[in-house]
Amino acid sequence: MKDIRYSVKSKKFRRYFLTGSGSLSFFNNIFGAGSIFMTSFLLYLNARPSDIGLMAALPNLTALLQIFSYLIYKKFQSRKKVIIFLKIMEYAFFYMLIIIPKAVSGRYQMVLVMVCFFVGFVFRSLAGGGVVEWNNKFVPPEIKGKYFSNTNLLANAAYIVISLTVGK
Image (cartoon, rainbow, N blue to C red; front, side):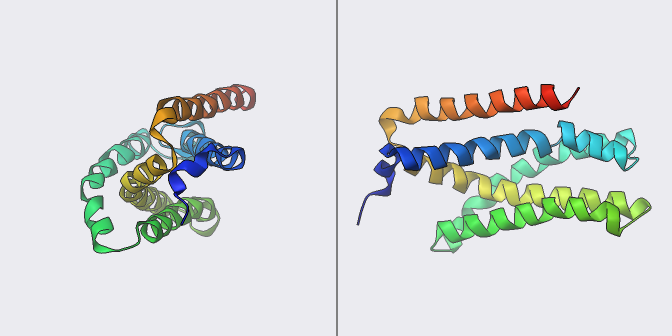
């Protein structure tokens, strides 16, 4: 069986992996707490300043759950299946944020937004450690630093350019 760690040397794999990592970083910058989208979205929903502050604190609070994520990975044999399940659940709760303004009105709307945001970040935190370890297996040690720095550089550059362009 082919060792998957060194398949990163193929151009096709690097391109897909870099695109996936870059788009994930971009997604996190756009839809994360305190981001352009989330702040505007909360203002659109007539959120109070205290609601916006709470939403900005939720990702940091849920990050504490990463400590317990190893228990989930230890319980199941397939780390890949656990990560895929957690990521699907994360994005499902974040996509529910799109539906809530149309489906619910009043104060329950803000409560549902907060719940979906919180639960989405819980799943993100639980998947975080596994995703980092999984990504480290794909990249050979001799190019690891350069590879991840280039990934972050491109994702942040795209975020800056798009936010300056769209934000006008």
